[in-house]
Image (tube, rainbow, N blue to C red; front, top):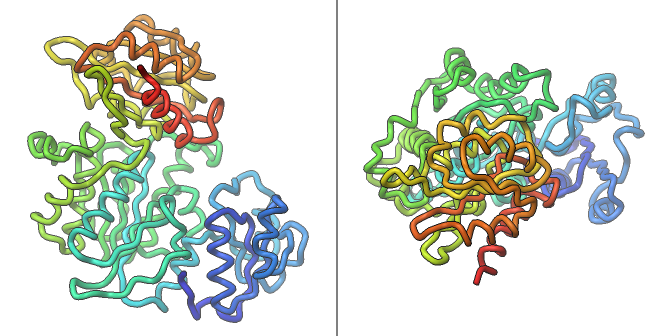
Length: 437
């Protein structure tokens, strides 16, 4: 784990004891801080009772505290802890801010921070892969993988200093005040998480803060393909590297099996720019693009049955993230070949971003809470089955699809009506595919 003299003798409250909260408690205690921890779940409190004091920050006296460390899942626009902390004059921070505060005490290193509405996890994993292939020490964390505080600090090697690659959600950026990324990345911005912000402008402002924290000598890599991203690029204090999906040669992209589709062209363009900013040569970058293996639930091929490819894109929880998947398999000889499974908890009452790709869809199968609404919306454009359940949609698609077709789970919705999370939904899809006879 990361241990730092930066926290010695200080006092922190930790609210929320899931993975990042537990790692936070362990880092702070090992660093010599006083820690008062709390979680609404009794079993979570029991897990740290031998390491930290227990106390609800909504009830204890916060005088003298150096910070309240909260989980990114705590909605600061609604939770009363925000006002209580303000009255007490205590900053609310997250584990990424603690990492930022610890940086001066760590061995020499660099930080790449990646944000955006869609594509963050794929791009984070891709950049991490490129750095590893170049021989540099690397760690991946933030909104992906293990909590960054729970990982061992990087030591330089013969190739150079280590690189921490952090996926950063808007929630994590909200809780960070001093993370000066050597390379900060913005992929795209479309409306999302609006229940946490004062409209779309508030969400955009959250993303912009990652770049406002950068020093002028550092690098900002921004895909300037939407108006909010262009606005952030115009005001970024760091050295700007603008990229677009069109920067990628389609013929070259064919040699990157796990990076197909227009959205992955943008992801690759960003990753190439980051690699170059870190001093990695083009030959190494291109070889890494070819060898990269996709993350689960993100355009993941889960099998072939009777000549039909089955693809799990369960991570696509809004129309903007589904649209590129629909563009990845264009019609062949004028015949559409995508069998699209969609639905769940809708984030919008339309699928406008997907409409340009309707010509690629042979058949749609709607599921979940939004199923009826989306079935009615799509029927004027294509054949639709209102399947309700994911397993039924897979079986129906398997009966209709022809060799060379693609059955694509790309729901354009959240999963919480029928599944715990998008991972559980993707796993259920894979299980349904494996059960086909």
